[in-house]
Image 1: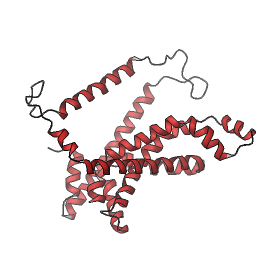
Image 2 (image 1 turned 180 degrees about the horizontal axis):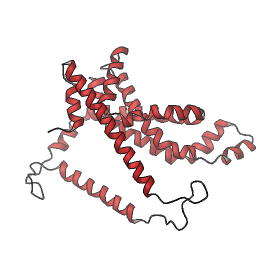
Image 3 (image 1 turned 90 degrees about the vertical axis):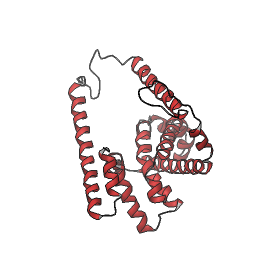
Image 4 (image 1 turned 45 degrees about the horizontal axis):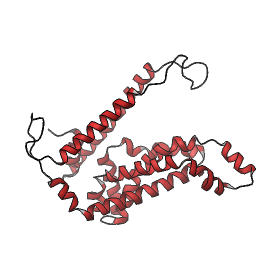
Length: 264
């Protein structure tokens, strides 16, 4: 049987309005399950987290920083996944429970080589959406008042919690109203909206943790805000900016719902 998310997807694609409403109800059930799991995980973390001492946010005395073995385990897991993906890309017939494929094939790589137009579309779409999302995130973090940021964050992160099926169906109806369906502009806007929360989430800690004393020193030397940004702040944050751009690029490349809906 299909998973609940796949079943909701099939119901939402049905021509019968009653079946579509069943899919919407299944999507709302997914939202509730995600909220329940998140709340349970939060309670577990809070119950088992070490106590804090008198200083706000300071860890309890005697608490040791984690060693390198968790990072080693994580790197080993990622390495194993990469090996399995590499083997799977050249495997043909691989019946259970054989340890290795019984037939090796390069058909998957030949398909990739013959899909240059698709790869080019994926590349420019990911680059354009991640670049715009990064520029918007930087502008937001630079100019938005604190109370605006607190109010807007839940809305910006809604796409991280809502099932992708419901989110894209809403975008599709919006695109129909704006006559942006089956256009590159509509697809780019949809990808940008999908990418934006991830870019903002990955950039915020480093950007908001920037030492304000750099700005004070820059101002004391008679330089304005743009000089601070171009010659001090952004160069110091270039690794975080590049990492956020890479996250947005990866998220855009992994999207499989906006193209059939908005891009047709």
